[in-house]
Image (cartoon, rainbow, N blue to C red):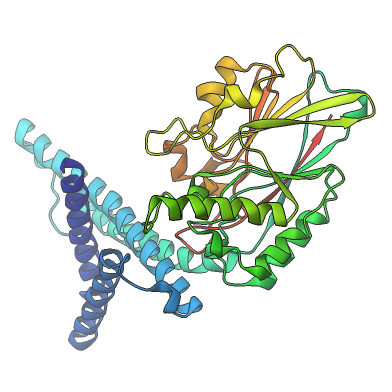
Length: 413
């Protein structure tokens, strides 16, 4: 209840500051244009909040895809924009408050009256807030054009005890397909062809094939995903969304049946689903262990279906490379590194890089980093590595802004 009150308070303050900023920006306009602009702003605000309030009751399947995508992107951009306005405007008010307190204590005459430098700073900050807010709105709408803009990330990774026969071994990793979010079979097929073009020795999928329901993988998508093939096979694990935990089922049996159907679909596509088990990949006399566990998260709001001890059983004392497929990257720090030091590479997904952030030579940032220490790309500790795939699909926000959908190619050296 307290958390809800805090969220509502932040929303109310953000709305107030946004209204003040927009009103200040249009105050010099002619009366008719000023009133019309403010009315449009209020209408757009009500539209955005109505979408959030009635999100679960709207039948999004009956909304044209383009209109749905633009609207959801608009709502997210509008809200993020208002939060940015809140931050900038709050900084200005704190500055004003500091000046007032300084005056009261020192009895000096540092002024914040109109015409002074302090007000110039306030005008600058107000305009900056509006610029950032507007950029956010436009950016999130633009981001929907990137939802099928698949980007290949290639890395070479050293494995300490890698047999000569496995040098140059190429792993293609996909994760977080979220079939239920797609609206373009051809675009998805193009992404799968891009993955196949990398000619991996093995293809590994690290969970979340669907959003909730096995029926999301219709016959067309099954045909597309069935084209994935590699000399040493296609292997998969389950992610948190694959269990159907986020929807209401008519009965527990219906939920179980849905998961069983999803398993059968993966099998029919030629994927080998690893359920808390491992397989041995072999080239001549050289061996490598591939371990796959069900979803296991260190975060309290995600389930722990995985059983690492069961999946690892039989590998004790075997001096061979070990690769783990585990959907949630929090598993690495919580269990893998402390208790399974000979698991040399863990492959995860789950975070999507939040589908929003900045990645450049100088800065790597996304809001998801405040929830997940390892959220995108390669992480290493001593002889253990974790790679977090940014996701092939999308969920919620129907786009990608700064964090593009990913196909990972890892070459072992």
